[in-house]
Length: 447
Image (cartoon, rainbow, N blue to C red):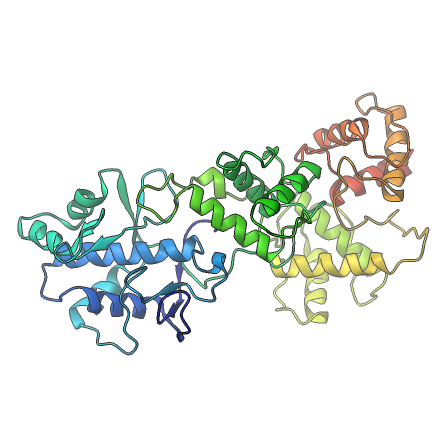
């Protein structure tokens, strides 16, 4: 549950109640909607009623997919065919031509509340045998016969504050879990989003301590908040957001915000927006490129097939050639573009290389970055090393507090790091990542 909703190419349907030992079938999203619509509505209905019902079916389904309703509960499917929970779906069921034509036209449209991101959990029932707080199917026919348009019908049942999203992008459905556990020293959009979700959950579970959600670093207070969450929900309280904790956070967040209900609190753009680039390619610049170049330059000392590159913060042809080589060597698609998969693999190989270094190793580009962000509360040789360089900088730069290299990352060290970050124009989180590490080591070596 991150980024804006997309239309999945395929959807996996469980042919029974969630806990039943039933078959899973994976079908095209459009085929699923055609099957459901043909099972639940009549092709002879007025066009406005048909379209209103199909849009409700699309939106309801996308809500389940987007909120990862079933995967976040440990299931390996997206939706069931049990009408006590979801839509009626019949394996190899008949599809009406009228329905098929409408679905092909509007399958990438859905309903949402104005100001919200998630597709509306557009519940409905037949309105004769069953009643519900949502669209009444036979009632929609009556409204269409009275001249109501599709949008009029939807607003009649769901309220005037809904809108239609049209031509939503198509994409393969991918799990929100980043594939790598988040822990103390992790950094990025996934960390920031998890922190904000924990802060919202805290309103319902006040035993969880509040976190500074304005930064993207997994620090000590984030670790404690995760541990508290894990204790409340009977998970191992290790302070690490692995797959089980990730999806439990997603499940509880969706629950407290009622994202799968018509009365949803609503998910807003600031709650899902990503600050950092998800792809780097030739022509890009900034701190993400600088970190990438640092990793590649360091690996180049151990793997001669990687061409040497300078750390400039600009993604030039030399950087692209190094990316080409890395992707080829490690069996990745050779695109020259650094997507999430390529970046994580480069970072992992860097960490492996650092872990194998002998004691007191120092490369041609200075002390090697430890492979994770250093945060307030950390202790050890890595902290002492960077404090030594910070102290040198502080002696000649009045904006940088002079600190003692005692190996304890305390408030004064954090203040010095924030001053460096302010000069660099990067997020002032007080943590030392690859960009800060390179800057501090380089400046310290030149004094």
